[in-house]
Length: 138
Image 1: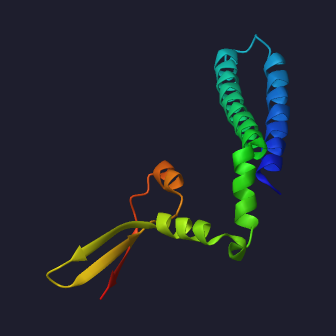
Image 2: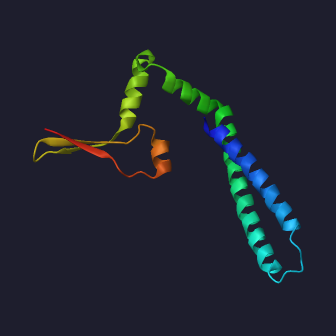
Image 3: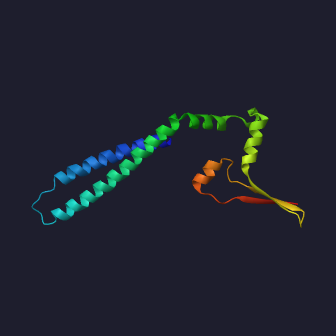
């Protein structure tokens, strides 16, 4: 089951639950002393469920946009492609993006290579990852 189907099922379930809750709210008799408390509880629950449903609807729409976006389709197709089919220039570019920094220590005659977690700089910036791995080469 993919994310689109999960969102769709959750939206359908929430829609049904919201309708049931609205029916229950409409059937409460106004003669009981606790009616106002029950109405407040139901209204609060309705607002929470509507907010959750809106979140799922927005997520579903965003998934649709991403799946139909040409750049995303191209990127996914690139991941499915065998790396041996890339040109030498493409392979070099991907490897160069994987390196975050190179530091050389002249006193110790030693250098360090700091690698990125991902070769895609935009993704790393988006997730706010400052973490990386260091490899000391002697």
